[in-house]
Length: 88
Length: 88
Image (cartoon, rainbow over all chains, first blue to last red; front, side, top):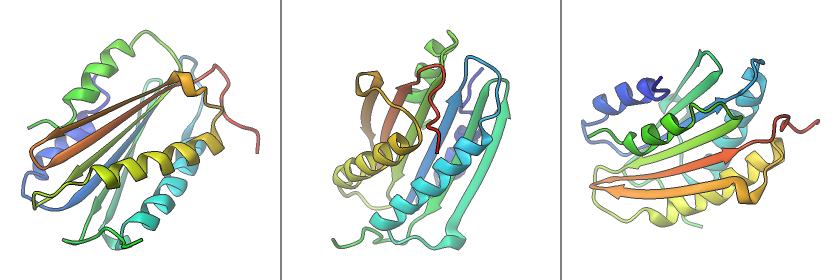
């Protein structure tokens, strides 16, 4: 199974050149337990640290969560303004 | 271009069932400037927040950085112990 088909589809439309940051989390468990809570916590934490580095418009963030078998994926797609890196 | 071929290759070997967390950062710029520094900072920050949630063995972390055209990708592959979620 290609766990990244979700993200792959997205990258095609991204070929219209825009500044963007895409983050994909894939959590694969040997066992079969629910890890949505972990992924959800990681999402919050990661968005927070990204926002410290980059000027993010919350409206320009798309999230997509998917689960197939033992693999939970979370896609975060952030459209960046032309000059988004924070001076620091 | 499929920016995720790197990650895709990796996910095949991951089909030997193991608990793992994979993170892919893809930074695509409309312009052509160097964003290795940004990706590198994000890598540190993201590893730190993941380590807060999950018990990570530093030896079980693989990093791969790649650059093709205007897209910089960073793959983080973390092998997790069977029960890795931190009690919190």
